[in-house]
Length: 375
Ligand code: SF4
Ligand code: SF4
Image (cartoon, rainbow, N blue to C red; front, top):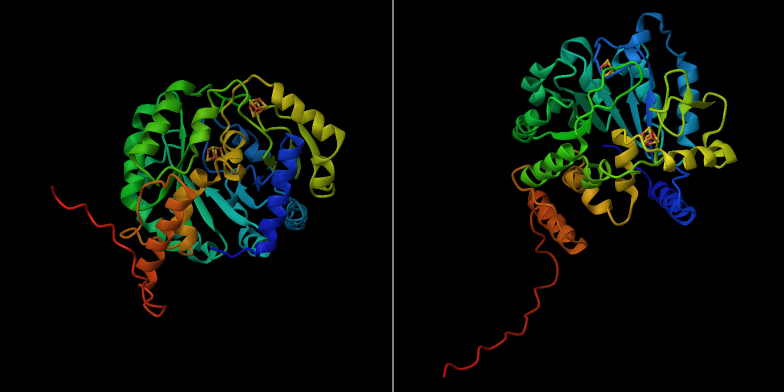
């Protein structure tokens, strides 16, 4: 897990404040960057593979130009996605290049036999969060047998579970398996995209089951509570996250509406976001009533909203404290209800890892309350 300078967090905090004052998500904090449309899967809820045989990837230098652009912006979590980013021949070079940037890297893949086909321990040095898609839609449920293997590559591992209308009942088994393997799970709805089958689950059922499983398996599901709440709202999405397509174009305000705007190879992202066109598209998003439930547009706000920040980051706090290694045996699994609870949990965690520090001044004697004499 890389260390970001404090200055970077202050910059991002400033952008959060400016969003709050403007009452709109001008500045995004999370970016999905589709590095390719090529993929070895053909999931029925996805349309990116429809063009895979005709698709030519962006040249390495253009990808680097987009990364430079994103690094000048408010984005503090960059996500390499696809298609499948592992199929790019230059992926190691790109992983090393992005490692100099002021963000955490999330990397999503669903490739089989990763350990045999790719140098994953080497890649893992540059990946903070490794997300592996495993579900019925990907037809790769057998990969649940390999979860322990994935944890050996140095990244924080999360299983990405896309839930269709037929799979809500099967969710608990997967979450239990993630808990047993000591990995996390991100749960999201299968969104209905153009030219795909409609697999969107019933949003009220999804909301109820998601929140119940979060309570039952604390610390496993990283999808914030507000994701499961917002998917039932008329207008629960916002632009605190963005998606850049595999040709460098920005989908804005969202991927589902399929409207492309500037190309980040040569147009500055921050200038565009502050432009009248950016503002007008955000207004359109605020009025949209599709209720698509796309995870990042409904969930990212929780990770930067001061009122939700604590609960949203809670599943990660053990990892962030301990540089990505989870001492599962000593980490309390309950979610703290306040800053005081969190501080207490941190002290327990640190003393469990480092031992108690007896070098300080002797403990102060506290006054005792004498019980009244018995009548
Ligand atoms: S693995 Fe991902 S990118 Fe590939 S077809 Fe399935 S959903 Fe689409
Ligand atoms: S609800 Fe509408 S604007 Fe919001 S992410 Fe979905 S399609 Fe886009």
